[in-house]
Length: 320
Image: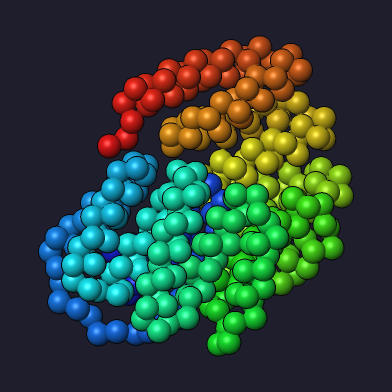
């Protein structure tokens, strides 16, 4: 993964967003102006390092707290670039925490910041806004923003455009619009970055599912799983692995489905996604029961008990 502490703030944004864990939308191509590097502020850099370390270790609430401190320091310095960086990365953490209303508020604050500086809204922020709207089940509003991104002059970066097509493909899949889904896949071309290739494979898997081509769906989701693993996008990897489990389930391969759900649930649990982990582990137990695989049933039950205990402990001792 690109080091999020590199001095180029556009690359920094790309690095953190490509690690985005619940949807794995990412990339950037901000229209923010190039500015001279301000003198280093030790407190600001310390807060950024602490936030990055917390993010890397899965302590997302703690990362939000440090990004808030970095934002306050950026306001003190009246540092436009540092303000946007802190807001962008804070919004990503909040999205990962499924705190969509808070993430949306941070994005609106960033848009106000850009307006005060006489700048148009950067494409990477528009993509974040569209993502949050999609997650809040306002797909129509999300699509309008994706239209704005794709029609922008000068055009957004190829990464942002590809991620925008990915989001449009997810919306099309959700709406059972196979025509728009095919259009989104075609618009992505043949990307070189593993994360973008994973996006294309994931959309191809959704299309195969819509066409009830279960084997093709399994292969596409498995390819996406491998690419997300390569990109160290482990949350996205677990999601694609569960999708492969779903395709296996539809194909009538209960035993294979149970194993994939189990692996996805185990990974999600160790990343602190306890609610999602329990959904996949419950499905693993159900599929294993259907297949008569007592070993997987027992394994799933062990993980379910462990995750339930971890979830209870996390409620008693929230991330600080």
